[in-house]
Image 1 (cartoon, rainbow, N blue to C red):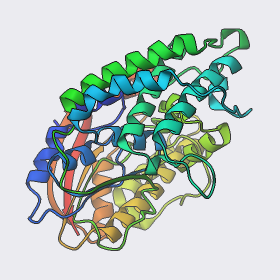
Image 2: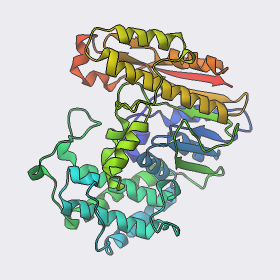
Image 3: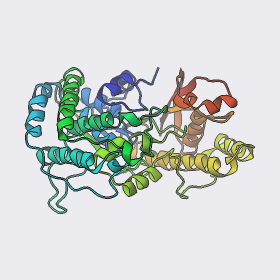
Image 4: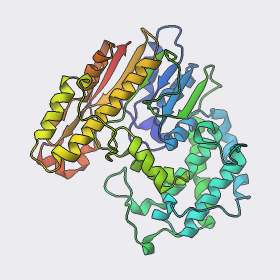
Amino acid sequence: MVSSAGEAASWYRYYAGYADTFVADVVSRLPEPAGMVLDPWNGSGTTTSVAAAHGIEARGFDINPAAVLISKARLLQSDVAPSLLPLTRKLLTAVEADAPLSEDDLLLRWMTSRAAVAVRRLAATINRSLVEFDGETGGTRPPSEMSSLAALFHVALFRVVRLALGRFAGTNPTWLRQKVAEDEKVDLDLRTLRPWLLAAMRELAETVKGRGLPEPGQGRIEIAVADSGQLPMQDGAAQAVITSPPYCTRIDYAVATLPELAALGMTGSEFRALRDRLIGTPTRDGSFASSDVRWGKTAAGFLRQVADHGSHASEGYYLSFFSQYFTGMWRSLSEIGRVVARDRPIVLVVQDSYYKELHADIPRVMCEMADRLDWSPLARRDFQVKTKANINAGTRKYRPPALATESMLAFTR
């Protein structure tokens, strides 16, 4: 099986991901010299952490800054673990006296001003102690420029915020309740947050000890915030691509990491902008093609079926949702084709989907897009996996609960 939440979940709970062993197997089969491996949807960082462990150069990009920090944290060496708790205790003895709070602060959706300021004070302490300030702007360096150590402390803060907001968890494990009355909001202070942060770091220290890198990697690893459709790379710079594109299942990846983005200090307007830019987002921004012959016959046929479906909003919202997904995927695959070298492998892990009873054969769509990009197929392996789509009881009206098909697709350009 390709997918596995085990290794990534030991660092942080992240919805989508594949197993370390899968990436290790692909890496072991790369032609020599391996060169630089690219993951344009790096997520929780499995590709980059495995590459680092094998001494291979890698670049991982993700448009979500919370994911960038989670993946950076996984690059810490195991021998750092004994220093983490002493450093945490030292930071907690000198917490910033105050921290600014914007009226548009995402934490205020669930927290009182007092609680939100307490979180901001911890974040400011982490940044003051572990993150270099930008001399030009006077602000903290962005996640792309933070060290793995600073990233780990932010991951600990993510856990603290998740713990504080646990009462708002819903039946969908990727969502928190969004509408919270004033008298329901979490009200706490540093007396509560200090021991929570220490406990979170204690757990992470054990993870670093057991799963951190055993020694300094020989290959340079770069992890940064970037759009998969506009990668900051030269033509042909990547020698291999190992990645899993966003699923076409209306999973709201932005909302799934909303507490983490709130912990980072993202405002409501910044969050909305990020959400609109994600591939597979349920929001509509109008920047998509209604159809495109380059997507292939399978995508075109599926879109016609959606448009003709009799259920509510099929011809409107849902047709535009799938069209926007295919637009983003074509743009990103085209960009991958630009940055990968000739005759080098491109390995994608993709999952199929459904709209009502209509099957969205995403692996086949990807193969047809690849054909239009003049990629040559190398291999395909299909696996049956559990899916969270069955959480929605409404889907049972159209089809019985079923496993999803996850496919490993390998190409060369």
